[in-house]
Length: 481
Image (cartoon, rainbow, N blue to C red; front, top):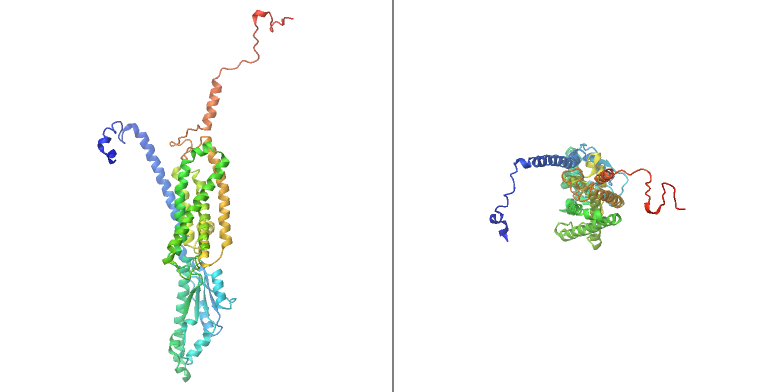
């Protein structure tokens, strides 16, 4: 079989071909060079559009961290609570750290946990009874647990990257600084006291008066969580792009011969079926690989969880497929990558960053299917920051809008095909690559006018011809009566 590639079989096949430098094809080579330069210019625009969208959303992230608020909650009400609160609120505010505020409305640790899980980023809680326990230890009590003084409450399920980079680090760093500062002040005060009763304290409590424990009320910090939904949706989107391009290149006979109402129904149904299949695979992949990388504290993975994953992925894939197919139906081949780049990068960025850490322009990412799908997935897994109504509403609205727009796009595409305006690949009439067996409608009109002009002119009036043998004449008036 490999013999078909041998030089012996190719001998003489190039005899009728010319060199690329031959004068006979110099014009064609010149056209190709110009086309390739245009492609280079288009590629330059595309790569800078993609890079600008990405870096524009993350380059100021470290100086916009103070758009995030974390809270100090004093449930102790004694000296420890007062001193810790003062130290925390006196922490220097920098653009790269969240802002500390005090919350007076919460009255229990459980209430703080519920609030952080529902709507907050994080909180430092001075636990009830912290002052009494420390005073008892300084008076000589044997047992003292410094970690019971403070509780750091975070929710990585709200937005994993922002929580890990800024909120969790701010809580931990501040709590450690407070512990060191409180210990220094307490040791200094102890050295300066003259009260003999204070000379036999619990030295562990003296040098380490306050500590903390960290509680993640919606844990999503398992290994693949920051990129799980992102790369799942990205794999689906890239798979859809290849199918959409194939549909665009092979749909010319449909537009030429099939009714518009059938086409307007066929394409959304096909896209929905494709989205269901690909998102089913994504849900199966997570089911298969969640074991070794799944946090045991996350919510239980049930049969309902699988279907939630599946249909959330379907909504994301369906909306993006409708969006891109609207573009692909009308763009020429050299431009088809542009909407893909400008779709993929903002969607990926919307899941790996948060809008508090981006310029205001990027609030538009609230509409990104990746963002809404990932928010739903994080809520399904962790129960954190429920925004189900908004996320589902945005996805449904996008599907309805894109379906209506695709109906219009199909109508326009069919008109362009039937009138010879564009060919199977999307090249428009006038392009050197345009090739369609359907004649251009203006050429048809021009040919019809030319044929009409070439016909002999008609005589004005009515021509009367008499039959000479019967003696009856209309011209003389003899009607034979």
